[in-house]
Picture 1 (cartoon, one colour):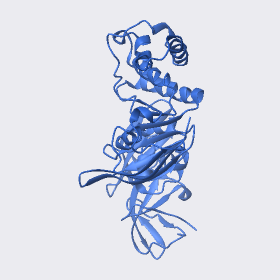
Picture 2 (cartoon, rainbow, N blue to C red):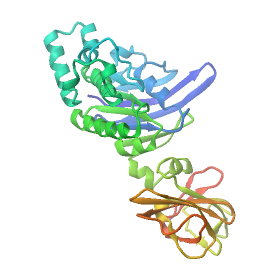
Picture 3 (tube, helix red, strand yellow):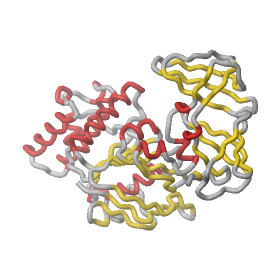
Picture 4 (spheres, helix red, strand yellow):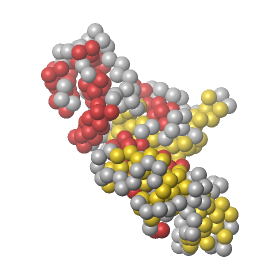
Length: 355
């Protein structure tokens, strides 16, 4: 097992730079998730670590080895892709052991490693089946088993659950979390699904346009985002944002008539535009006449989501435990604690902090 360090990593295709000087330390045994929208560079960064993409500049260290220009097979990594890439004419046993057989590993050692991997992944009863006789989740477990038998220092997962339905995704999230706990190996996992990121990661790396926006534990990013992008990306449903104005220290907000905020900023932002952020669970919808219109109510059993519009056209989502207390078309009020509000610079999107 080994940790990993990226030092000023850059990637360019001709004159177009897509990864812009990324620095990141990953501790031995950590489960790190790269998350961000499509095109943010997360898969490119993973492939650079794997050696499948050439590093334009910077250095990649796995353990105490500089592997920046080392052949992928010599890096001590194993990669699991979105597509299973199983050999359809081979059994599960043969697929898992294929790499070992190609490297002339003794048969008794192969048997031991396959037995151990199949036990961990609960594949024992499927070893003589071929891929066409397996479900999507079982095929992905075979692909993971093929990686386990190599005994890598670092596992790399590139959106491995994207081809699975919702139930199987949940099942496989549990399997991967259990696998990490059992193996204790460093794992780096790429996804665009922030729910996967929140449930699996020891540490999340939020990427945008080839840059790291923020690194931290899931709840740290949820509760203390550095900027509007992270605040809006982490969390489901997303954080609500309301535009407003600050003048002489007083903040008025579009869509919140007769409500003025006063926040003691660490650095005075000056008069002008400002944005306020509120999580849906921090907003309570009141079934009494007010300035908000209920556009849609989603009742999911244990929780309800209430979609609201302000008179000025702002959109708000409110979360309520259990059944909703309002219906579509109602005119309602809301309430929330001012201490739950986050403040962002309207131009840069950076978080504004209190004293």
